[in-house]
Length: 334
Image (cartoon, rainbow, N blue to C red; front, side, top):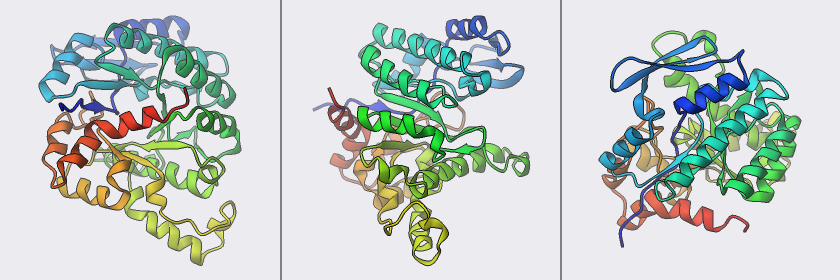
């Protein structure tokens, strides 16, 4: 049986999508400027991101890159730069809807190559819940990708409860992606904002979901953590110990938490065989799914090759490359 490799962590924003966002929200224009055949400059409301790979907006180039790296399916999601949560009660939901409807077009055009998880207006949780329901029921999306915080509010803030309740009810694939990182003032040098800031903020999000009681209130909630979960798999036992010896972690969690690391799902973006194998040992192979972070430079375009090189069984490799995500989809309510 041939393995159908499914990359669960990819991003897209086409030129058409950028133009539609700009038309809907002219105060936050999104544009691309060509540097050369391989790279473009992305400008989002005056914030410039150089060296954005062509495949991030160009479908034929994306398909070519997928073929070259042995990836059969991309699970599309919006680019973090275009979450644009600060646009307010009307425009933020509209921008999310634009990106979702565009991704639905890509999936419809290439149903054997693409699936999607949508964008949601995180700052308007009730509308985010409505959009989550719309994209799953109308477009067949599998869930949503969203930021690790909203303007400094952690994901356990009571404002997000409508979103978590709906996500649990729908059995949605909820993917936490770092954005608006903590400690940015100390991470300005050496690209530390990405090297450390991104995994740090994912870790804060995971701890907030645990100690805020969100995961206990919604035991059916399925949460994926980007970039190998940040520091979560390797520090979760410390969190469990902290609950036992301190009063502060007990405020919302009244029972000793156990197996915290296994309560989340993780992608494979760890850049090292031994680290990925260690994570698999900590969380279980059933909690790990293929991811590349395509098209970004901190991603792993060789993600399929990387998984196939691991010192684990062929059955476990197939689980990570394909069947774990397929099993998740099979478990979603019809």
